[in-house]
Amino acid sequence: GKDIERFDRAYLAAHFSIERIGRGNAKFDRDKLLAFNQDAIAAMGDEAFFARLTEWCERYAPALLARDETWRRRYAGVVRSRCRTLADAGSQAGPGGFALVADDAFAYDPQAVAKHLSKGDPSGFALLQDARARLAALDRFDAPAVEACAQALAAERGVGLGKVAQSLRVAVTGAAASPPLGDTLAILGKAATLRRIDRCLTECR
Image 1 (spheres, rainbow, N blue to C red):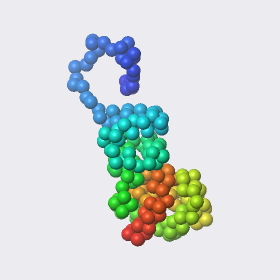
Image 2: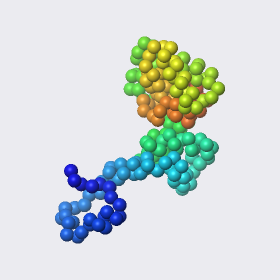
Image 3: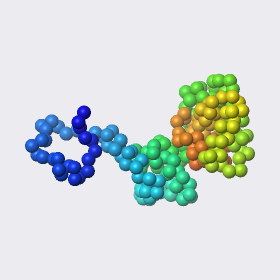
Image 4: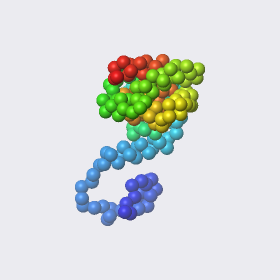
């Protein structure tokens, strides 16, 4: 219980000694390294993370740099706390991957569809139809506006906000997990959000 996992060079210099080295083989724990790296990214701040991600993309993901800088800054701010590495932010398998694929190029998780769209009264599909009309009418399509729209729909239909949010999340990402709903839809933009809802209503019902 006294093991210290994090220390700087000054601490290491003050406490290290050859005599205390054990005989057992050293173990390189990659999971622990990724956890440390995620903590470092979370502490980095949006501006620093955006700068580091831009440098990484120049070498490994130049296609991402073709996106508008304003969009890339917003995207980086949303996914930063969910990334363990810079590669996570630039990967379609990462926490922002739903925004890096075409509207018709992601699959719907059957379990998520069954749980969040098919069940309930009203069903998720019914809520999606109402949500689509409300979202299409928004003049401003940013996170606060999207969240207010979802809250209003939930109150009107007498369901929890989570029911509306999960229905929309599955429709636009194919899965039941993503960044906060407002950020998720704002990153996609109104046109892509509506296309994905239409696709879901057509293919999954």
